[in-house]
Image (cartoon, rainbow, N blue to C red; front, side, top):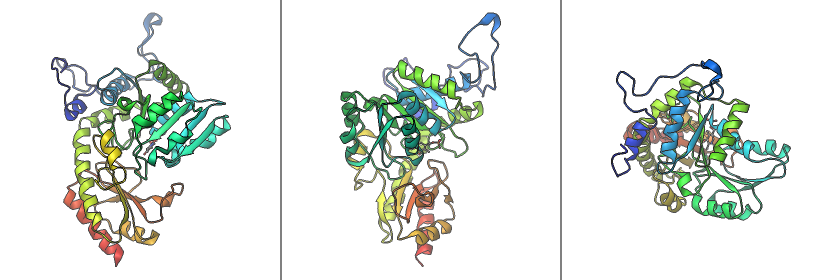
Length: 378
Ligand SMILES: *Cc1c(COP(=O)(O)O)cnc(C)c1O
């Protein structure tokens, strides 16, 4: 494809990402390599020595993710056993005693729960909310700014370019959690971030059958630090999970495009319901995040959030869904929903629903939700 001048489209890139050049009698995506160690004749070294350091199945997936997160500039990706393994590899490899890190006060709660651990190591943690780019106010003297946009579960959006420029001027590194958007929804490195970090468990792999995480950066120094962290902490993904995730990338564009259509169809139906308040989806023209989201995002993700009158109402709604499964997580091919407040830890109302549209037909998702709302309201 390098012979053409034009950059191929998103579907083409996601189908071909990380696949080796066609070779006679070889599969288009080599199967998972199960190896704890590799033959090292005569004290040979690299590229593959020991299973905790490197694996050829990771390598292909890492090349794929680099090409999706950073199509126009060289980048390195490190894959991890989960999104949290990737998140903590950045936070814990980059900051130490005496440093200050800025976290979003409304980000994914497991990321926020690293606050106490960081503080126990002598790190100062400052929190500020995502909307209104409020993290700008607390950047002074920070070593690292952590951004999550759109945020989970509130779907708040901040201006990555604006925050990254201010953070760099203040001497801070910038990491963006790109889980919700996926690299086909948003490319943080092109917007000025130093690191794009994500859970591959959600929309990226998209089938709700594996856990994975990754870190992508254009900086060889940052990549080396994260690589050393992975090797010393050992939060490595299995070859089977890595291969499944890579296989799933071929349908990433199909899935996120379908989810975009379904999310807007669901939001349009919810907008008509008097019992629904606080409807949020960054792709909705009237959403408070829409202006910033449309300037930096290519697709808006699978999550639609809204609030029902109270906890019991929400539980009746979830119990009446027939097609949609009650589950935490999001981004899967199957529609899922949960009452977020059941977990505690997020500043959301008792009736707050985080709904993730799958790739079913929009009419069926809308019918399922409308029917369950009717049942809940009786
Ligand atoms: C789920 C999630 C994570 C953590 O990913 P795991 O694969 O569950 O460890 C991190 N950030 C965000 C925004 C998430 O939604």
